[in-house]
Amino acid sequence: MNKFKYEDIENEIKKIFIELLQLDKKVEELDSNENLFLEEYGYSSIDALELIIMIEDAFEIAIPEEKLNTDLLESVKSLTDYVYSLLQDK
Image 1: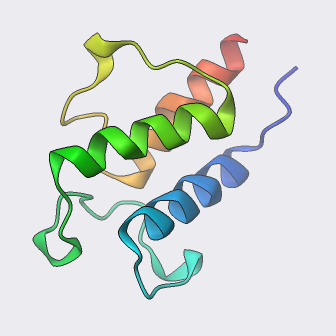
Image 2 (image 1 turned 180 degrees about the vertical axis):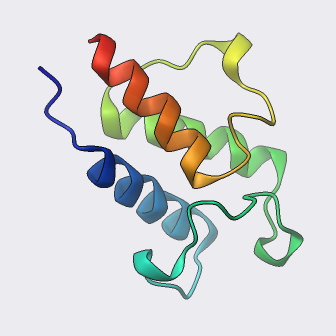
Image 3 (image 1 turned 45 degrees about the vertical axis):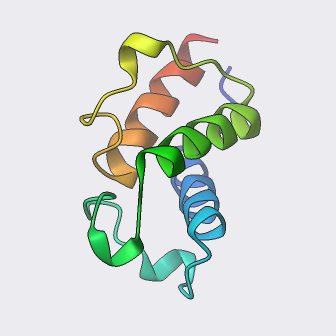
């Protein structure tokens, strides 16, 4: 049984994103559908890799390399959907 609720995963991913980019935002201020590659955040490919590593550590999962693409990293929602599906399979 999955111990994580969808909302909990979403909030944790937001926290990781805020921490990684040192944003002056609260979790509730980050729009889950907003494109994560917005230049206003200064988001780079190195940040993307760090984000994936932090998410893998937080949820004790491994995201296969073939899944690492712009669709997955498009938004908090796309990441949450994928992590939730991986955790459902655990």
